[in-house]
Image (tube, rainbow, N blue to C red; front, side, top):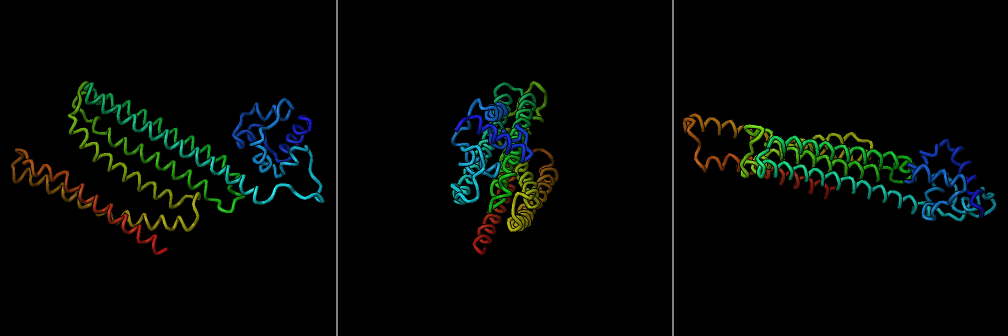
Length: 317
């Protein structure tokens, strides 16, 4: 068929649906100029895009190729199975985009942690490393938020017509959450560098790794709690999944909350022993070891209990 016929047909369909060229371009993942070239007859859509265009305007691929509606008496060439396959392909594209966004954001977070460690240990510029790392972490957070928000917008129109409306949106939410959890852990890892004695001073490698690991675990757990709260109230998941998340949230509060409370009690006891028993002269090596070993053991036990509960609860379902 002539290109102009298809272009005129696409123009008429777009106007009847109330879309602008920019909105059509965003939903199809192409540029505004590409849509304009279709409508003016300069070029034709790629054959791989025909199912997506047909789905967007509610027509068949044969109607697009003809440049006109097919009378009802003629049998439709696009079956329901083909329609579902086209929707599945688009959902897979959204999932791949979300995975890429999480990977890029997590990579930036890892680079921020490495930069702070190198500047603090190698160049003796811990505070400079902290601030530069924080800037990179802000960039990682923005990448995850903006990228995933765009994918969520593009997939919102498709999910309304699918049998499982929460599939793509839920996956995007999880990938965004993982990227933000990685950024939170990286921020906790570089946090000890902010307490260097001077701007042009560094911290000892053992202290950077030890305190960095503890701070990273703390910020990760706090961010994980916020993530579960957001997931329990997110419309991207079904009511059943939200109820399951609320159960996981209660279990996490019981296990990790108990570990945090016992850790606080241990730190109070350690401070008392150091001042009252050893008269502030410095605790022995075994007690310093216990200072870090006891919280680690408590949170490891809490994590094991939480995973065991989660496994049993899923088996019951």
